[in-house]
Image (cartoon, rainbow, N blue to C red):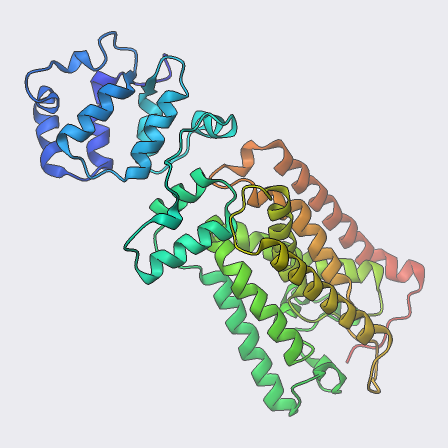
Length: 403
């Protein structure tokens, strides 16, 4: 109990900063007993000064003053109290809920199935505008639990928008158009002798230029690869960024891109790399793995058919990359881009990505699994760096001359 502030000492002052209704709360700060209608002492809300308040008492107080609190938040608050053996609401949990924070006990209540959810789902929500309907669609596409879908729907804000995936896709399109116009070639651009001279392409002969391990994601073999990657980035990456935020999704995407080029430098030492497939496959694999592991809870329509189509498309893209690598349809001056970046991105998605997607509204640093994934990824990075510095000379690898 000592870890919680007294309900009678600072509760209403903190709540006044979080909830709307300034007139009501200004009265409460000036004369706290007015919150109870002027006739009931405030001590009756917490007679023993324990830092807890009865759920029925609080619900009645909210309804009696018609506070403009989101219905979902009130339902969550009451459900949280019902998960407590004493039927009480902790002060700190209440403040966390009001300020859109998920406390650890709140998450445990969800995990233990002790939540009393509203009977009507978001699909029955009437009178929604176009954007709110899109937010509802994203909630059902990405999140497996109804309580998380409600939470996301009611607390979502349009600012900041999902700028990372949109910006990366736009930059890739601009770069492709520039090189397409310059080379006068829109399909299989890698067969043009000037293409590999780009400072963005990863080439084994330019390993010392470390930026190429990331910037290759802006270059693409042709219109077909760009179209495939851009479509998946917008259809899967944007909803993921809306739900999980820019920081987490950008970290996952760039981790897949970096792992892709480093894996190629280890397993296919003579090959260059182009395209954002490492990041795309990290996002897609993480999302598909999350759907499979939460199959019963996912409410997205036609999920089995869509899962099969996604796997077929991703497998076809890998097959196309393998074919171009080992059986080039046109004469080429050197090895064609490797397909290993696709597979490396998928591994990152299933490991790091799945950990991120299963941690909605939870701090990653509090999870042991996250540190295990980071340790494994860091070990891989160190190994790849040493490999690129020493292995090429020690093994006498015959790499094509840099363009």
